[in-house]
Image 1 (tube, one colour):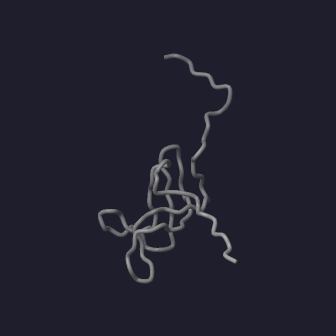
Image 2 (tube, rainbow, N blue to C red):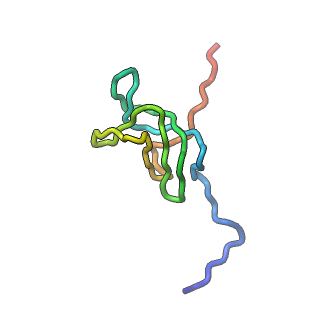
Image 3 (cartoon, rainbow, N blue to C red):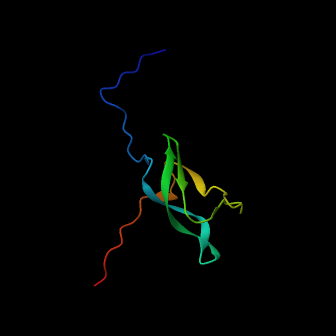
Length: 91
């Protein structure tokens, strides 16, 4: 097998780390109703392919089942996960 050498460590751009606050576009409860919208959570596990986000609210899988531990797994490069958008002040 050929030897691979790096001058520096491979880039980890776009990788979410444990403790990051993120938003996930998912099914969850808001005001007693089930909605599909962005929900803020915290990254509790992360590797180069997948990230686990834990929420305080009930979250649901796309097939309708509630996730009992409030943790959803997403691919690192999913379009359904992002850092929270900053809210500007209106004057």
